[in-house]
Image 1 (cartoon, rainbow, N blue to C red):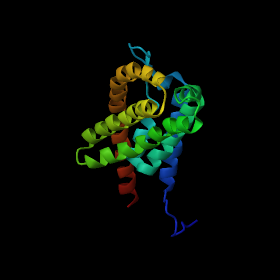
Image 2 (image 1 turned 135 degrees about the horizontal axis):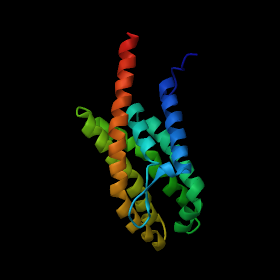
Image 3 (image 1 turned 180 degrees about the vertical axis):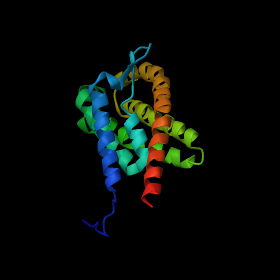
Image 4 (image 1 turned 45 degrees about the horizontal axis):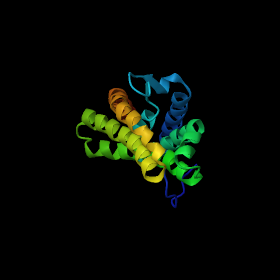
Length: 193
């Protein structure tokens, strides 16, 4: 089936597969202990659920990263909607903005961070992990504080202690996974010629 020339959004079969695989991985991480790594701090766990959006954005572009971020946002909303609503005084619209906007931007910002440094792939992948993690953590906390109640300030100690662990996880996991996917796809393209 041919694509319409008037289509504004073009996703290849590979892009759709990446979005589906990493979206499913986000759901699995959100629903299992694999998404919450025990750490010695106030919260007791650093999350890994944002890492698929980072990787998807880097390897398949900002739109795919945003799609995986959308899945992450939906699973976060499913599990934590009461908390989002509480911090936003029951305002559904604001709670949805806080839950969805930062997650939609994780893969987008990670993509552009990687792209800016793509001449040095490992540094680029590590920076993408850093930027994607900060987009998630600072985005949710910042919007919660900006739009929500003073009770949202109770998140500050948790975020400040979790972010270093989450950055470390995103960098340590992201660099080899991104390198492996890029190498595999380069080999696939070279082998097809």
